[in-house]
Length: 211
Image (cartoon, rainbow, N blue to C red; front, side, top):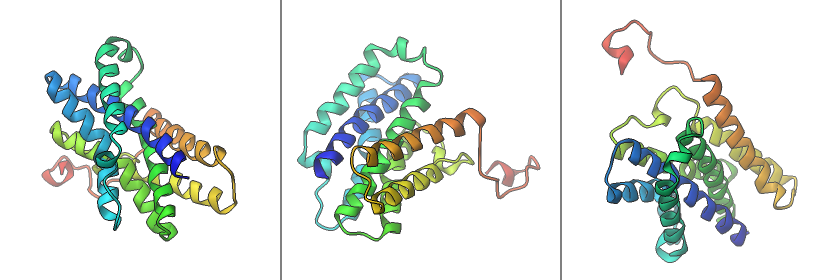
């Protein structure tokens, strides 16, 4: 399973680097700032995941290939910026792909460490969303996960689907492909139809409604 995890995670780091770089360029950061945001987006979730697991080294510290994939994603975003912006809402598109790939990576690593199913789901969700959280904080935006948008819920459903298929002994690559595509498709559907969770606050225009 380790080779499969690395394969998905490499692609995820490349895609999330694009997401981070596009965000930074939209904010008119300089090239170094673009690289920093891309790097933080790509490694944020995986770093938190590895810190939580006893005895696991932080993935990009021991496997420098991830750094090259992040650099490649950043350069790709810079070089093809004008073409990427021709895609409808490119940031959300690449973010959805990274969300799917990294969530499943987190679940797979949780299974490797013999965690309970609920902990595998939590680990997958952390891996999927924390890069985006770090990206948004660094560019001074409220992270999407803290808004009404269905974001973490998509990860939870996709991680649960992976575990169901795993318990049914579905083999790779189908075991990986179906949950990843499910998360990507569901995330894009949520964005397209503006599906959101209900607010805890009445929309009365007051201070509490805004917070």
